[in-house]
Amino acid sequence: MTDEATPDLYINSARFAVGVYDVLVDFGLQDPPSDPNHPPGFNQLVRIRMSPQHALVLSKALADLVFKYEQQIGKLNVPPQIFLQMGIEP
Image 1: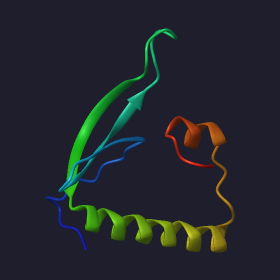
Image 2 (image 1 turned 180 degrees about the vertical axis):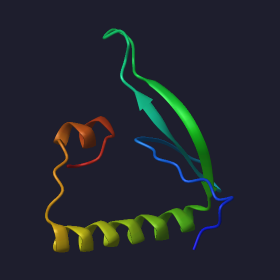
Image 3 (image 1 turned 90 degrees about the vertical axis):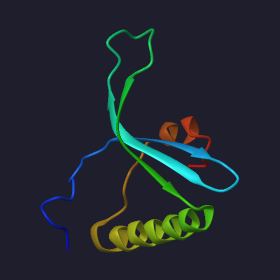
C-alpha cells in the first residue's frame, strides 16, 4: 500500500554501479538522440542504493516475477542487441 506522498515514476532506462559495499542503480528516462552522432540523453529521476546481498535477493525476486508473468501472459520479446549492449547473454 502506498500513500499519497510516495512518488509514482515511470522509467525506461537504468544505470548501474557496483562498489565493495554497495550497489547503485540510477533510474530515469532515456531520450532519443537529437543527433545520430551523439548518445541519447539520460534524465536521472532517482538513485537507489543497496547492499550487494539485497541486490542479489532483488534480482532473483524480479527474475521469478518475470518468469511467472511469462507463464501467464506469454513470452516477452526483447531484441538480443539490448542484452548485448549491456554485456549480458541474451
